[in-house]
Length: 238
Image (tube, rainbow, N blue to C red; front, side, top):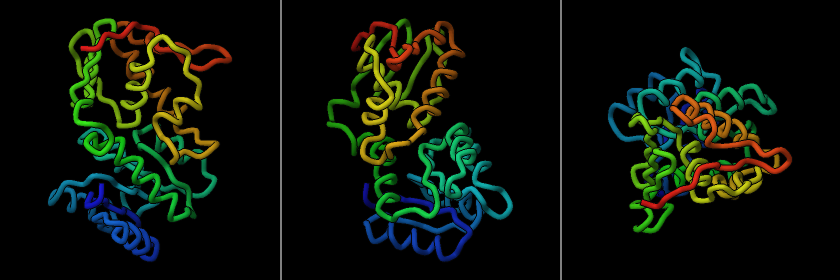
């Protein structure tokens, strides 16, 4: 994960400098951007592995950039929001951010969340060499772990964010079992998750809506009252 390029999109000069310096000291290749335009110029020149994205920016705001990144590429996003502003956090997750962090934040928590996102989105750092060859089938659907791809029964690709894919992978590897929220949170987000982290709820709702667009997708993940969630289909290992 070290040497990963991380774009820090933050208009506050002091905060931007502090975050860039912190990440660089930890072995990452962090680059500061004051505006989304500067980010776009950076993205044209080199591959970006993660964007640490402030919501309030001059000109185009962080929400708009996050939407663009979800439609035009696969750059994961750590959204930075105002302290206690639940609306901003929920909106950020709804439009595709992989995680959020409220200001002011603890530098150690920032590093933990950055590393957690990079582990989830860069398979070579997360799994053994054999796991990328894993493929699963369920009710005509196909999930390819190495390609991080999901195909519906009609052959269409289902575009998922990193967090959504990890959730689906978790369900597929624990089919027809009732999984509670804490299990899903632990397996997909690990130690970077806080005790009141609601990101899992937003990402789960978004995943279910995306699956529902394909034939038979609406019934794949069932809510179990008082228990949690259940992946309803039997799964075959390809």
